[in-house]
Length: 113
Image (cartoon, rainbow, N blue to C red; front, side, top):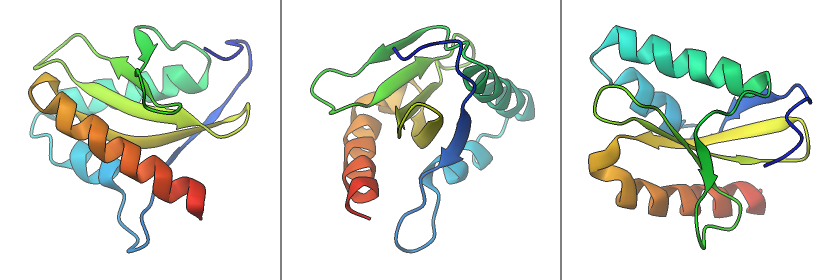
């Protein structure tokens, strides 16, 4: 985990078609309180408070932020330098494996551009 005292900025990954998979996932969550909690977690990450996060094994720099409410929401992200957090994808526990595979593809796409 990077130095937690550094302030960071979170940006959403945007694919070549202009879509943000993370934003689409977040806006499709029906529970607006859950949306607010997820947004708050991102603000906390920008402040250096990553909470329950871990590196994903064999994912080339992708981390998982685990949120312990609802169906077990997950935020998948990576770092670009010391001050930039790239939000790749989101899921809940039920779609975790498939979403990690998508996040890997998004990260590959991000690094190519």
